[in-house]
Length: 159
Image (cartoon, rainbow, N blue to C red):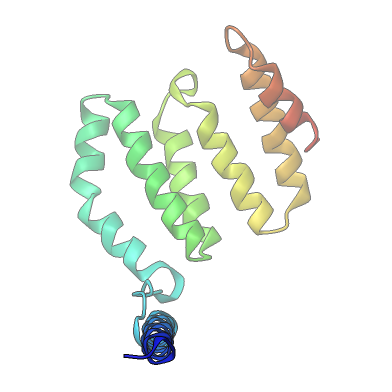
């Protein structure tokens, strides 16, 4: 067998493998970007899902208030308010947060609730309410022991 024939066979095999790898790569790229679709979350209009969740959790909220488990009540209400806000329903988000202020003693309300009020005001472009809630957040953060100065400084920028 001639030496040149052996080199030709190797080159032919190398070209074949290169083309095969290129085809596999192109196939993967086509599959990933065209065929393979990630599931998209279903968006409902103005918090219909949030309303269903709110109705389902009504008994838990009542029970939490009855036994004065304010942490659980606040957690349920904040998650509902966040869900309403994510759906663009600022009215219901604010209503839920106002329920917290109405039903929970002032000293049991965490600063996070007022941060949520600030987020609602920001979404509504209400600068007066944003300043009001930013001042409340700063005063509550300063009252903490020890105060978180970095967080206070970031909220002072909102004033």
